[in-house]
Image 1 (cartoon, rainbow, N blue to C red):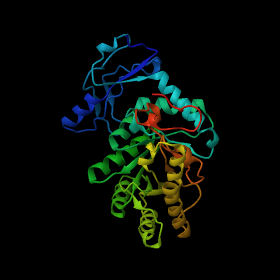
Image 2 (spheres, helix red, strand yellow; image 1 turned 90 degrees about the vertical axis):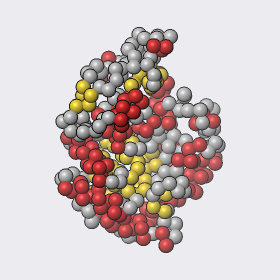
Image 3 (cartoon, one colour; image 1 turned 135 degrees about the vertical axis):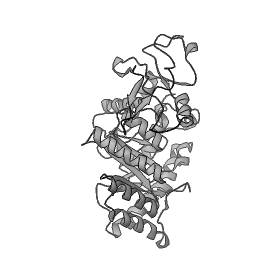
Image 4 (spheres, rainbow, N blue to C red; image 1 turned 30 degrees about the vertical axis):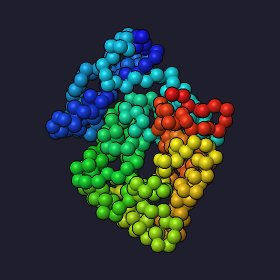
Length: 353
């Protein structure tokens, strides 16, 4: 079966990532997703060296492209990511349709941990916006810095890292990322990160202030997964850490308090829509409401701050809560066997795999 211009998108990914971590790192090396074969010629890239988004150092091609248009699938070097563009675009259209009732009230920020590619992330944003111009969809989520560096390299300058960035070296990379984003898109760039610890927040703030830049921070609230984040302030004994952390953000010139993050990954795979809705309301929405209530009482909350969370399995329920202002689905791009076991409202699942 030939690799057709109309059918597949191939990206050299895992080999480049592995080689990047084996090699000395005088500059950032990211998964080399510049070699893209697509039915749209404007996306095709052939340069063997591209410039770092954060420094003047070049990204060196570590491996040749895994395939070229016209190759048989049996000739594609592995490992390689091969994506059916027809399915990906149909899923973007389905997401835009699913979010129609919430356009203008709830933004969509696709999670790039699903694709780990700047080219794909840019394509997804364009397709969703094309399918529903009224839906706010200007940036992506990333789970770690390497993903954020990759999507910035692919042209996305509005990035939320849905994790804590800890340690001097990683914080330096976070600051470089923010500076590079603002250099590429001064009016549209935004780099944000999650915090759940005062000392970590102060370290980020000090580094940002020294670099004459600013990092947006969202406080992570644990919605029951017990993975990270401050405990949901459901009683008076658990409210002080949240107030202290946000007060520290207000007192630190290097950061801007941008809202809260409240996500429960395990709920994405609860099978029935009725049970997913109930669990989202009882765990996630309740935790977010409690945090907002504490901050509002302390005069630390204002309208316009972000309340973000939700994934492919639950985004409808965060969206209808009138609490969340943003959802962050990622798996909708490709779907997988486990997601396909979920039941969905309506006669058919909205997404294909």
